[in-house]
Image (cartoon, rainbow, N blue to C red; front, top):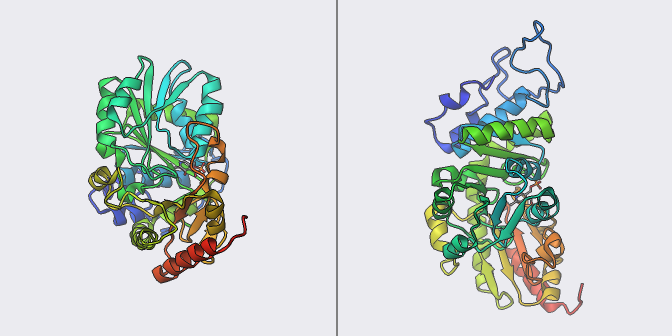
Amino acid sequence: MAEGSRERWADTGFATRAIHAGQDPEPRTGAVAVPVFQTSTFAQPAVGEHLGWDYARSGNPTRDALEESLASLEGGRHGFAFASGSAAQDAVVRTLSPGDHVLIAPDVYGGTYRQFRRVHQPWGLAFDPVDLADLDAVVAAWRPDTRMLWIETPTNPLLNVFDIAALSEIAHERDARVVVDNTFATPYLQNPLDLGADAVVHSTTKYLGGHSDVVGGGVVTDDDVLAERVRFLQNSLGAVPGPWDVYLVLRGIKTLALRMDRHCDNAQACVEVLRGHDAVTEVLYPGVAGHPGHEVATSQMRDFGGMVSFRVGDEALARRICASFEVFTLGESLGAVESLVEHPGAMTHMSVAGSPLEVPGDLIRLSVGVEDVDDLTEDLRQALAKGTASTRDL
Ligand code: PLP
């Protein structure tokens, strides 16, 4: 169904590709929405022959549509859909071998660190956190067995930004691959493959799905050797998404461009509230001129995204503020239409407590949604006021 679709839409703009690439009307019935092929197996015309699909772990037409769409949006030739962002990451890391070494930033999604530390390290992989913003430090940390540079930019939860092009040059001179977790930026704001990265991973649970109703992941690459290995692992490990979940991600992707513009505008408005507030000691947002990654973000991103973190100087105060919102929902995850607030130290990043990646206790993370901007800024103001006024330690 999706065959040739990506090529057909290749010269169109992002929003057009988000709606059409991989999602042409189904040829037999003309169905405009990609059908949900809820089947585990496919009838074969003869022994050893099939119509393109034989078993749904290996491939499913609904999943093909998402894989085409992801590849089109990231500008790569090979797209793969997974059951979660974590499964996508695992498949990419497992293209390495025990004995290989990986460099990661000292600020990544807590589950990413946990996977390296508690799954891949016992498997035989070595890894070290290094400040990827300091290119000399990256060169100094490089080992003869370093085979992969793992970049998350902007990072979760500190919103650090790393120079994908410069880091790719360092890695490629040393015969290593560069993987970028593009979950925060989305392909609408940043295309790592164009900047020199070898592969992009996504938690499609976040902005691509965009409605807090599905868990999924994706990998896109232009590297045929890497793609072959990821394809093998996708099928062998079997962490594939079901067709309904794929359908939800595809449906979310159609409005990604619209939503991201609104996420960025609303985030900027929240940043203005935070910057002028006495209780806020630091605002972490790459769109702010004083942010250490502002220049790199300006050069490699089209806008600065919908995630905003800030510090208030005191953990008890941070917890009180988190509990004081009325429009923002207190909860994990990010990137959906509804605004969310969380305390990373006690929620998404609990798994890095006591590690070099431990996040400050006074940190609050906002995933700014697409509600009316005045309702969000008003809620932020009242939560800051209520949290600051309260003497009750939650
Ligand atoms: N990468 C980032 C930046 C994330 O924030 C997350 C989850 O929060 C993941 C990867 C893992 O994705 P999933 O929860 O879909 O497994």
